[in-house]
Amino acid sequence: IDACGSKEMNAITTRELVWLFLGFRGRLSRQPYFLAGLLLLVIQFFLLFRFMAVPEGTPESGFWAFSFMVAAVLSVFSNIALTVKRLQDINRPGLLAVLYLIAGFVMWVFLCFVPGTPGPNKYGSDTNRPG
Image 1 (tube, rainbow, N blue to C red):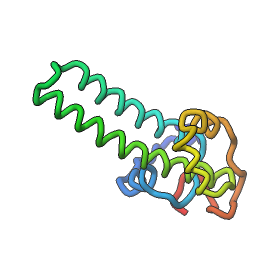
Image 2: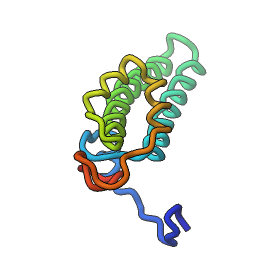
Image 3: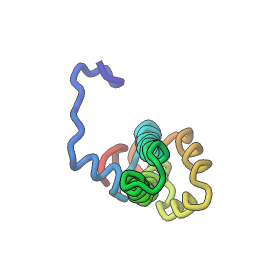
Protein backbone atom coordinates (compact mmCIF):
# COMPACT_ATOMS: atom_id res chain seq x y z
CA ILE A 1 0.00 0.00 0.00
CA ASP A 2 1.47 3.36 -1.00
CA ALA A 3 1.16 6.73 0.76
CA CYS A 4 -2.18 7.42 -0.92
CA GLY A 5 -3.68 4.14 0.29
CA SER A 6 -3.55 2.55 -3.15
CA LYS A 7 -2.44 -1.06 -3.44
CA GLU A 8 -0.85 -0.44 -6.85
CA MET A 9 2.46 1.34 -7.19
CA ASN A 10 2.93 3.11 -10.49
CA ALA A 11 6.27 2.56 -12.19
CA ILE A 12 8.18 5.70 -13.08
CA THR A 13 8.68 6.01 -16.81
CA THR A 14 11.83 7.22 -18.52
CA ARG A 15 9.91 10.29 -19.68
CA GLU A 16 9.02 11.15 -16.08
CA LEU A 17 12.64 10.73 -14.97
CA VAL A 18 13.83 13.01 -17.78
CA TRP A 19 11.20 15.58 -16.73
CA LEU A 20 12.16 15.24 -13.06
CA PHE A 21 15.90 15.76 -13.52
CA LEU A 22 16.06 17.88 -16.69
CA GLY A 23 12.69 19.60 -17.15
CA PHE A 24 11.85 23.14 -16.10
CA ARG A 25 8.05 23.11 -16.49
CA GLY A 26 5.53 22.05 -13.90
CA ARG A 27 5.54 21.73 -10.14
CA LEU A 28 7.36 19.47 -7.69
CA SER A 29 6.35 18.76 -4.11
CA ARG A 30 8.69 18.47 -1.12
CA GLN A 31 9.19 14.71 -1.00
CA PRO A 32 10.35 14.14 -4.61
CA TYR A 33 12.46 17.32 -4.38
CA PHE A 34 14.21 16.00 -1.27
CA LEU A 35 14.66 12.46 -2.63
CA ALA A 36 15.92 13.57 -6.05
CA GLY A 37 18.40 15.98 -4.46
CA LEU A 38 19.55 13.25 -2.09
CA LEU A 39 20.04 10.82 -4.98
CA LEU A 40 22.20 13.34 -6.83
CA LEU A 41 24.28 13.86 -3.70
CA VAL A 42 24.75 10.12 -3.15
CA ILE A 43 25.91 9.67 -6.75
CA GLN A 44 28.45 12.46 -6.34
CA PHE A 45 29.76 11.06 -3.05
CA PHE A 46 30.04 7.58 -4.54
CA LEU A 47 32.09 8.83 -7.49
CA LEU A 48 34.28 10.93 -5.19
CA PHE A 49 34.82 7.92 -2.91
CA ARG A 50 35.82 5.75 -5.88
CA PHE A 51 38.25 8.45 -7.07
CA MET A 52 39.87 8.69 -3.64
CA ALA A 53 40.09 4.88 -3.28
CA VAL A 54 42.41 4.36 -6.28
CA PRO A 55 46.10 5.30 -6.48
CA GLU A 56 46.79 8.79 -7.79
CA GLY A 57 48.02 9.10 -11.36
CA THR A 58 46.60 5.77 -12.56
CA PRO A 59 44.19 5.42 -15.49
CA GLU A 60 41.52 4.44 -12.94
CA SER A 61 41.95 7.70 -11.04
CA GLY A 62 41.58 9.61 -14.31
CA PHE A 63 38.38 7.72 -15.10
CA TRP A 64 36.86 8.36 -11.67
CA ALA A 65 37.93 12.02 -11.68
CA PHE A 66 36.34 12.52 -15.10
CA SER A 67 33.18 10.68 -13.97
CA PHE A 68 32.94 12.86 -10.88
CA MET A 69 33.34 16.07 -12.90
CA VAL A 70 30.66 15.04 -15.40
CA ALA A 71 28.31 14.09 -12.56
CA ALA A 72 28.99 17.39 -10.78
CA VAL A 73 28.10 19.45 -13.87
CA LEU A 74 24.97 17.37 -14.54
CA SER A 75 24.05 17.60 -10.86
CA VAL A 76 24.19 21.40 -10.87
CA PHE A 77 21.94 21.49 -13.92
CA SER A 78 19.55 18.91 -12.42
CA ASN A 79 19.42 20.71 -9.07
CA ILE A 80 18.52 23.95 -10.81
CA ALA A 81 15.77 22.15 -12.77
CA LEU A 82 14.45 20.58 -9.54
CA THR A 83 14.59 23.94 -7.76
CA VAL A 84 12.71 25.72 -10.57
CA LYS A 85 9.86 23.20 -10.30
CA ARG A 86 9.89 23.38 -6.48
CA LEU A 87 9.74 27.18 -6.56
CA GLN A 88 6.84 26.99 -9.00
CA ASP A 89 5.05 24.68 -6.58
CA ILE A 90 5.18 27.42 -3.94
CA ASN A 91 3.96 29.90 -6.58
CA ARG A 92 7.30 31.68 -7.00
CA PRO A 93 9.07 32.36 -10.30
CA GLY A 94 11.58 29.74 -11.33
CA LEU A 95 14.10 32.49 -12.07
CA LEU A 96 14.77 32.58 -8.32
CA ALA A 97 16.58 29.27 -8.83
CA VAL A 98 19.62 31.37 -9.71
CA LEU A 99 19.93 31.83 -5.95
CA TYR A 100 20.66 28.11 -5.77
CA LEU A 101 24.08 28.85 -7.26
CA ILE A 102 24.81 31.17 -4.31
CA ALA A 103 23.11 29.48 -1.37
CA GLY A 104 22.64 25.90 -2.64
CA PHE A 105 22.38 23.79 0.51
CA VAL A 106 20.52 26.43 2.55
CA MET A 107 17.99 26.91 -0.25
CA TRP A 108 17.62 23.14 -0.70
CA VAL A 109 16.83 22.66 3.01
CA PHE A 110 14.42 25.62 2.97
CA LEU A 111 12.53 24.26 -0.04
CA CYS A 112 12.31 20.82 1.58
CA PHE A 113 10.23 22.28 4.40
CA VAL A 114 8.06 24.97 2.75
CA PRO A 115 4.69 23.49 1.76
CA GLY A 116 3.50 23.94 -1.81
CA THR A 117 0.49 25.93 -2.94
CA PRO A 118 -2.61 23.78 -2.42
CA GLY A 119 -4.53 23.16 -5.62
CA PRO A 120 -3.74 24.71 -8.98
CA ASN A 121 -1.52 27.76 -9.36
CA LYS A 122 -0.19 29.69 -12.35
CA TYR A 123 2.53 27.06 -12.93
CA GLY A 124 0.30 24.02 -13.16
CA SER A 125 -2.81 22.29 -11.95
CA ASP A 126 -1.08 19.45 -10.14
CA THR A 127 2.23 18.77 -8.42
CA ASN A 128 4.75 16.19 -9.60
CA ARG A 129 3.60 16.42 -13.22
CA PRO A 130 5.01 18.28 -16.20
CA GLY A 131 3.37 21.68 -16.64
